[in-house]
Amino acid sequence: MNPDSRKAPITVNNLNMRYQYKPVLTDVSFEIPEGKTIAIVGPNGAGKSTLLKGIMGLEPLIEGEVKFFGEPLTKKRLATAYVPQREEIDWDFPIDVMDVVLMGRHGQLKLWQRPSKLDYEIAEQALKDLQMWDFKDRQISQLSGGQQQRVFLARALAQQASLYLMDEPFAGVDVATEKAIIELFKNLKAQGKTIVCVHHDLNTVGEYFDWIIFINARLVAAGPVETVLTKENLNKTYGGRLSLLNDLTETMYRTRLNQAHEND
Amino acid sequence: MINDLWILATASLVAVSCALVGSFLILRRQSLVGDAISHSVLLGIVIAFLATDSRSLPVMLGGAVMIGLLTAWLSDSLHKFGKLQSDASIGIVFTLFFALGVILISLYAGQVDLDQECVLYGEIAFVPFDTIVWGNPETGVDLGPRALWAIGIVFLIVLISILIGFNRLQTVAFHPSLAVSLGINVVFWHYFLMTLVSLTTVASFDAVGAILVVALLVIPASSAYLIAKSLKGMLWLASAYGLASVMIGYAVSYKLDSSISASIAVSAGGLLLATVLALEIRKRKRRLQPNRPVGI
Image 1 (tube, each protein chain N blue to C red):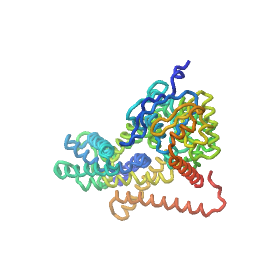
Image 2 (image 1 turned 180 degrees about the vertical axis):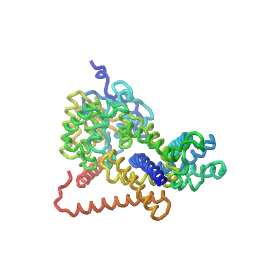
Image 3 (image 1 turned 60 degrees about the vertical axis):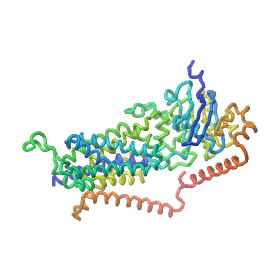
């Protein structure tokens, strides 16, 4: 049996992170199961994206450690695929869809190697899985928000990882893309792969995910949806009405952002 | 006539090298760093000359790379640890280095075969007269202008580096975090690019000087950025814009009997302006056409 399957895909121990001098995350520890979809949920500024970046080694940890299948990240880099938040991507960059997806293969290639026929086939399949094959020659700025998201999911898919870390994949996407993502989750889960997403929408979290990690500067709760999606945990995470209001405004902002994108 | 050819060949190689390196600077939003390095390498050249008493190519390139990397590292550190804004820290470091270079030149003016005018503005018209001679200076074989050799070698280094490192450079420029997540050493590639910038600027010095080399680093690459659909396309387009600027600039300077390098820079600016206008006109035209298929 694969030794990986005995260890949790991610183990976080006493993770502490700061932004300049302001603590963002304090003493976060959890372990996630393999082959599940896991949502990181919390109000704005709770440190959800920061947690994901800390796990991926993209932002420095003040304290604590993260293990991937029981090993440090450096040994599991390529087994871990990252999908950044859509707003963090330079959509005007002169690059077409196929080249973005092929980036998922570059980690496996040596410096002087060019993508092989097999790499192209993997990229092609990834694009087809997300119904984006027809757009392979488009520059990424000429896509709608949902299509852009699917390109980045295809890139992650082409990496053929065992663990997928996604920063708000559902934020501001159209219905077709939302369906495509759900379909992708199903397929990945069927292959025993693990998906961790920062997620914003409390209405869908129970439907799309098996597991929830509630975060608000500290860990509030982590566990299967059935046991942790409770009024008590929601109250603890979101506090008073003020944060719920913030949440609502951000949802509205994101929707508008997406509409603006689809109109141009 | 042969002199015109030497000048055109040198200027073309300068333009293409700058365009290739400049494209990556533009995409990484680091054109100011290019500006900084192009100025501070002066200090590197002077120090290298004073230390070794030699004007040979490896010495000049070595000195320039050293100071170029130091500029990049120091401005980064000032930003991170000194809590200064990143553009302010770049401005502080390169002006300081450049001023130090100018002081050293004026102090040792007798010994240093560099004068301030030439360093600032370059004089490409003199390129054909400073040649490399193989063997005895009187009887040896004339191998052609020094400046052409310098930029020729640097052009090859730049070209080979980009050919080999294309995928890595592309990923790092596109999304540094994504590059990190793929296990790419982003810091290494940053300083690698800075090395290429240092090499390119120092080899372009004789031809266009410290000020105008910035024009060739930034303008052709920016024009290409406006229309390119892929990174490969952008590199080709930037090179074409650079070459076109050289040809037009040379013709203009011939007509007006003016500075060649300044005319080249002005032509590059003119081509950028023309590109912006053409894109704007195309956009208006499209808007006027009713019933056009809406892009998905």
